[in-house]
Image (cartoon, rainbow, N blue to C red):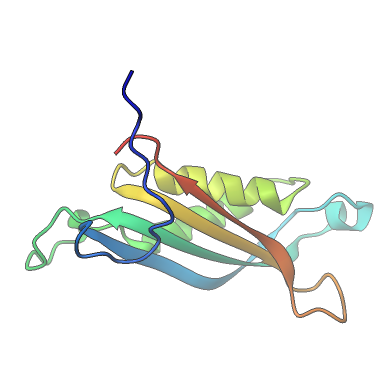
Length: 137
């Protein structure tokens, strides 16, 4: 039985592995998320950051959008996920974002951080960070 190759925490550009790092930092969105009644009544601000390890398929001289993982597309999809009804946990939002990013065959790993900046007066932010890997390369 052969083992499925898995990349390990390679969320950065790596010339030897022929990967690049696509990222979105500090995207502010509104989402209906939380377990408390007041959180179910109105949307709250989230800050989402995504780091993607992306397989390079181009030689660097091709200047074509379809040859890259487009961060604009990533942003639009994050916004769509966050606006798609109420969920109880930001962990659920993070998982959905990671799963969505990994649908692109070029994305090998997705690290997603979802923060709630308005929960506690004495904290700048609270949140969750996950990393998900493509099972097959």
